[in-house]
Length: 220
Length: 388
Image 1 (cartoon, each protein chain N blue to C red):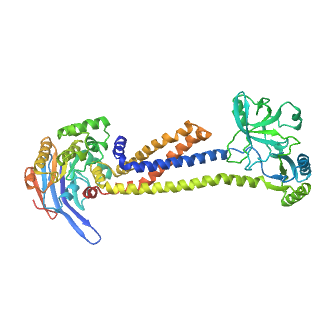
Image 2: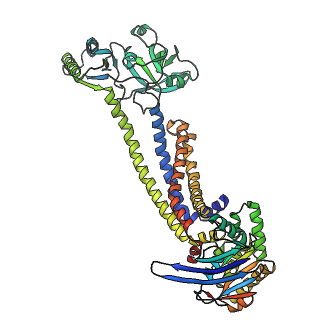
Image 3: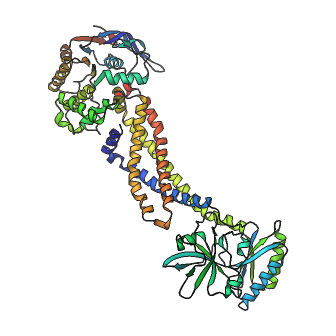
């Protein structure tokens, strides 16, 4: 489903060259729940950005569903992100000026989906995360756990095959974190492939496979 | 997407209220200036209806002299006509073409009351100004024996006073004692120049014993120069000792008159240009700040499938929606002008000004939003998400 071969990422400024990722080889199979672990600054988020096509590697190859994406145009990459990938972020990234349901609808705005259909799909996604009673609320009226559930609803509203979660429980207490992990596990059971970045060993152990990074290098 | 943008802007209406007021104020000023420009431009494109080249205005003022003014004026007229350099000459009231003077009154026909400019002049004015008649004839001294005072009216007067009828040979009244008979109709007579609107006007026959109207319009032959002007002034001054004698060229008067119209328009244009520049700079600054504050949102939208073009489109769309809110408020005010017939201007002028003001506002906001929107689209999604 997701294949990274000899991926390297170098950040260059006028005086410094930083190797953020070095020779990463990952193969995530369809339906797998994989977690990426490592200490702060080891390149976890960079790796997730590369998998999510938000950043390009300096070297190496990425394949999504068997197709190499190096030569894809901005339009093609955007379409791929929209159709195949769902993102969940540690800081939720909800738009405070939009209601919960309008936030959830965002990925569908970049497809040819009618307003009615968007509304139905967003309601369905919110029901899955147990927030159908908060549709008209605004993010500022929600708790951290509720915000993350809205973010999950937004990630799944377009029915993507892959969900990329960047420390989804990082800003939540353990009870709320377990609840969010539960939702992700349920989505995985329903067929979604999930790649989750975390620094919580206990959370990582609940996933199918663990990839460890240290100083930009894959250690397991 | 449009609904989404409306929702986004509507939910942030408090934050954007000052910007909405700023765009609204710019629209109102622009509407005012454009109304003035459209009004003057439309007038400018209409011919003035007469020829003024080589026409001089001999202005006589009797000063302390109060005796036998009418015979003296008649003698001067005869003398002026006798020069070989003069083609034709005509006496006229002080509201000569391009002068600042105005004589107005109203006339009534079938209970329709129309205000008009009155020009008191003799039978020769049409020849001096080459004023073509559309209907009927120009009055002559022989008309003085008739029961009614003969007048020639312009087309605007005929349209307003007689609606769809012909005004020829109709009798109209100024007051209960003065009745006029229309003997001819001219097309246009824009005495105040190119920028004057085509308003109702009438020419009334000046009696020979008239002592008040002391201007003489002189049509000179081609090539007549200042030597003749000096001779003319000298001769007339000798005939009318103690009188003031001045000669002006209608060509020069026309330029002065047009400048009087153009200067306020230019001042308004400069003021509104300054205002619009301020609005544009303000918008540009606000949008730049807005984008740097919304980097996280830009990153999120890119992650959710927005292309660079769609991010640009979104920011442009937001400013268009914002401008639309302002314009809707502005239009509620602006449409009152044509609806309530403010300043008695043609509705079409207001409608053109409204459409032009709307177009200019959209152009300005687009230009101001273009660069920040492009910058927003170029923000790398991974960097934008990280900055949040």
